[in-house]
Length: 444
Image (cartoon, rainbow, N blue to C red; front, side):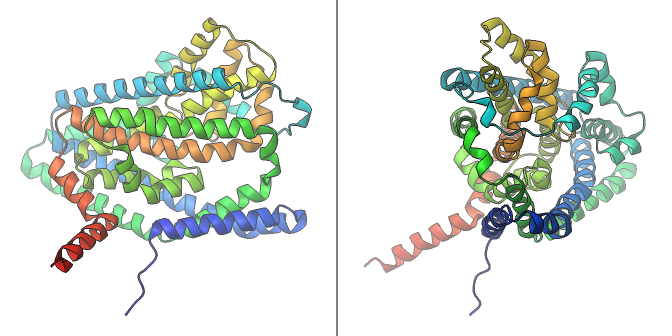
């Protein structure tokens, strides 16, 4: 009798624990740490991130084109897009407000001796800030949606222009005569299904990638750097937990879903996103699972990639807390007017730059100056940013998965029967049903 294979979630979790143990050990040996990171761990982690980046764009393009061609109605698609943007704006604004309320109640930056805090060089983020501020002028934002060269956009990994092109291409394809359209639709369908198979192949490497990436993080920063900023880190984690179970839980219930079910469906992806602090690592799997759970292909393939630019609940929640933390660190008492200005600024600057490295830092650098908070304060929290980034990335995943279900229900396109079949097919559900059946058979 063969032993049951460990699930992907357990493999990733074991990789996470072993990576933390190795990183904590290497943190005490500076010479060995440098060699291990540069020659073993960083390359092993980078392989996984590159593998994921390799498949994301082909999946987004092929899935979107097939989904949009299936809808075939520009008015219907426009309605879906409008509802998606409205939902994203409402939820991310709530995230910003929740962060501000909690930071005002807890005061994580008050009473901290700044001389006990280490600093990290943030000049790499400052270089990008001017570009971000320029690109968020209204006209520039609209122009940046339209790629002058789709191949250049693909090379740079600019998701919004890629989505725009795929939607337009899908609409054009849907308007062709059936005999002309169908061969091309089948081709893109084949590409989409092939890339999802490739995703499953790559996920076999995920535990090793997680092990390497988390080991590098812990080896570089250790646990000692957490102590002076423990209050901030704990507040961010509590805020994210509250938002996931409270705010998103309420939204899910209003539309007839359960956020706890969603968390169980995505347990593998949440552990992976948390460990790598990268939403891209799970984007293909979120699209795939949402389709399996009853959402139409057109909605899941459109909402998920768009959400990765416009619906970063975890990131916006963190940014509002971090902004007030730095203000409190410098003893700046922000008025209600300044905090409202901060909310309005974050509503604009937090959209559409998910592809920028260190996105939350770039957004904060582009925002803090407008409300009179010293930019230098970010250097104090840069050392623990990765620890908080892991949690906010996991929340981003849940937020975007729920968005697919909400828009599907809002449009009356959600397949309840398909969703129920998928839920009942999950391993934890099968085992429970088997146990119930066995218990019934054993009754006299």
